[in-house]
Amino acid sequence: MQSDDRPVKSNLVINLSAVIVIWVLIALVGSLLFLIWIVQKAADDQLQLEGALVGSVASASLVDPLLRDDFPTIQARLQTIVDALPDVVFCQLDSSMSSVGAEVSVGEREALSSWMSGDTEGFVVFPTPVIVNDPGPIQIGLLRVGFSLEKIDAATRSHVIWVCIGLGLSFIFVSISLVYVIRRVIGRPLTILDDQAKNLAAGDLDTPIILDSQTEFGHLARTLDSMRVRIAEQIQSLQSLSEELARSGDSQRIMFRELDHRVRNNLAGLASLIDLSHQNASGITDFAESIRGRVHAMSVVHSMLSQEHWDPIDLAGMITLLVPPGSKGTLEMEQNPNVLVPSQQATACGMVFQEMMANSLKYGAWSSGGVVHVIWSAPEVEEDGTRRLSIHWRESGGPRITGDVSPGTGTGLIEGFVTHELGGSLELRYEVEGVRHDLVFRFKPNRS
Picture 1: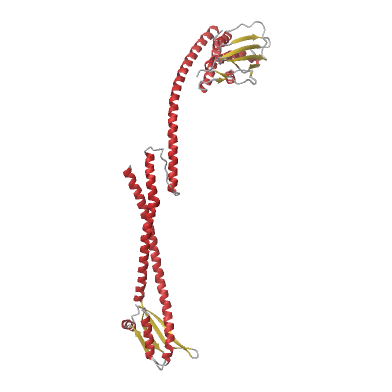
Picture 2 (picture 1 turned 120 degrees about the horizontal axis):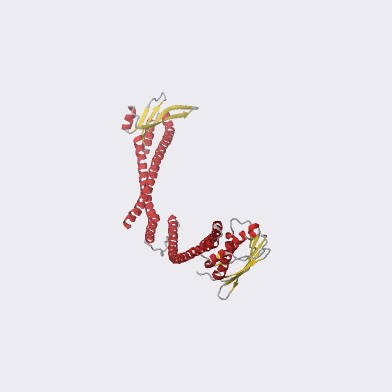
């Protein structure tokens, strides 16, 4: 991995430096072209200005000698202009005075020879009239001042060369400075981040990732450090979760054994209920109706226990779910306090209420749209932790009870569940207005 990371990092700095240097070079080349154009234009403007100025000064100095026909003075003054100005290669004066009718030419022989022969390509000539005011302006001559393009171009090239040298030195200085800055600003932080990221990749979650910088690299370092902290927290959380899963696996094995035990008990109880219902049934319809209600009660209790993960279940909720679907009456539990039924006694408790509801639906208040009141108070806690709960079952609005009531299979089941499974007692009364049952349940502490 190290042999792969280093070239990538180096190439990044090199490529970035090359791109910046190329852009600087392009900018400098553009600046150079623009400066050459500026220098050339300045040279042309300077030539125009110099030509006009030289012609104006020279023509003014030739007026008096020309009027006096003083040709030696004219020639001397024109020669002085040629000698003083390097770019001027010849001066020519044509007199328009009839009395004189002469021409004076001074300067370089080759330049004068070319000019006289009509070869004007290598020269820039500025004609200036020689004027005398007497009394109005009168042209008495024409002065031509010739400049050499070769000398002017040589001077321009000299300026351009020095400009190029200056820009070249500036380019070298700027390039070296940029490369240094890039390596300092980018290369050094990358090296530090690379080393710290390798430690993080190697599993070192204790060493913080620190980069003292306010740039994007500093932000990246802080982001990597936050990621390191989150990874450490996630690893710790996964370790805790692994331990919790191990404990949960043990709990699930215990729960499965408990579930297996309860299912076997429920199946055994169901088989006993089927036998008992069959022995006391008056017919197939009666047998089917009784066994359906009892199986429904067992199913309701089992579903509630499963939803609560075999923890204690709510008594009022269980009674509400046990109400037969075809009931025409009303169930009222008023404002009873919350009571939790231990999981190991929930099935027996549900079967007791199912049998009383079945009797009410078949013979009691619910057979004619009456009301069943189920009332209890807060349970009393005994010394061993057992909760003693008194429940009162009251029916009203049903058919009047006349004569003696013979206990049936349901009553026997109620007595068996209350006394054996729930460890309590019961008093079943059949009064004329309706049944009055008083039951006592003793709920044992729920097994973990």
